Image 1 (cartoon, helix red, strand yellow):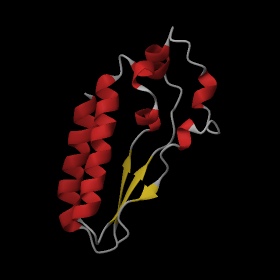
Image 2 (image 1 turned 90 degrees about the vertical axis):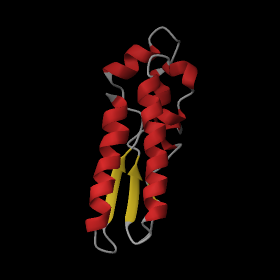
Image 3 (image 1 turned 120 degrees about the horizontal axis):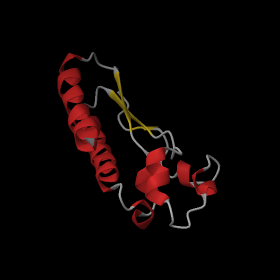
Image 4 (image 1 turned 60 degrees about the vertical axis):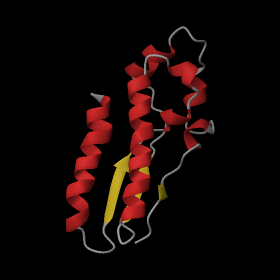
Length: 116
């Protein structure tokens, strides 16, 4: 499901949006700071993390292939969810590492990849 939602879904949106977009239009994607969390801490979340890595690459290509469109990738930070709790359970993970001021959630910031 993660690949369908985070990669295929966004690919199809970009495929059909970009030809219709006026110069200077903005197209936003929602990614995740989970890609900055060390993989051993997230065993069990491989499809989610892989899908977000693929999404980030898709965003880079959409920006490069459409220089007249502003392409944005938003990374809201690592969110304490049931999925994250399950993946990190029993691994000695300190929940404070996911706090907004920890630095981890600022590893990737919301940057425009195409400036239009």
